[in-house]
Length: 294
Image (cartoon, rainbow, N blue to C red; front, side):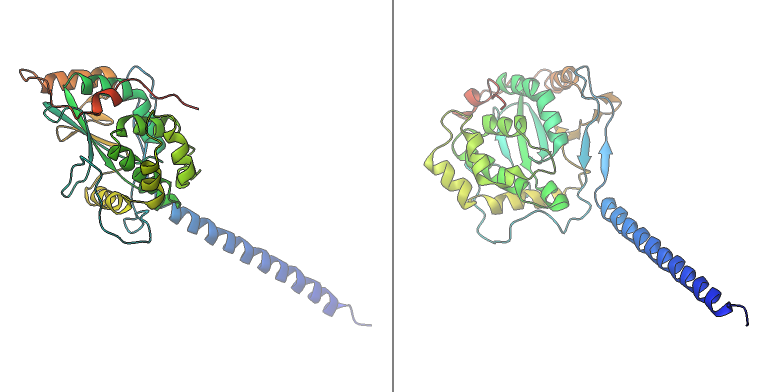
């Protein structure tokens, strides 16, 4: 009887088929990994160095690599600006004396963890400079995280903040949102009920008109316009912070930003200039005190 070559070959072919299948699976897995890496390349992480004596060790800004995904809503509507906002091609909400000698421009996203780090470290310093008339701040609201990670929390929170501006409560509500910011991957701010719940931490804000503004998305189109200004501005990420047009975050020239350095830079810029006195009627009280977390 001839040796069982046919059987041996069959086993060899089965092994070869198994190896080929395994190779195909590895190739498929490699392709999936490459797709995942390509997706990750769309979100560039910028890490700043150590920031000042308060120990803000590193701040991460997310870059809007995909300008086509701006986190906007699907509905189109008229642009309804919040009361007292700055219009033009760079919409913003101002805080502080309008005639303050220096201006801090802050481009940020309520879902951005680096923005919360910045706000939580510099909040007291910025409010002190605002209340003294040395500095006014212009807040430019972006929806970067919605665009890069999905969800609607950036847009919904920005609209709610604009509704708080209508009520003269923007600074306190702005701070409350950052103090109570969820994890970046948790789109809790996408729920209007959560935003209304947090409004309860700001005395006098949770009113029927505020709720109607939040639930109706009154300022959605205005927020989208503000986000488009961010996309067109050439900024590397959020937060982007400029003092009198010069970038100061994470550094101003060779000097790292810190609360002490920010005070020094403002004092240098304001030398020989009078502090501002033209405060909006509701702004000074909102800029004092810090909302509680929880």
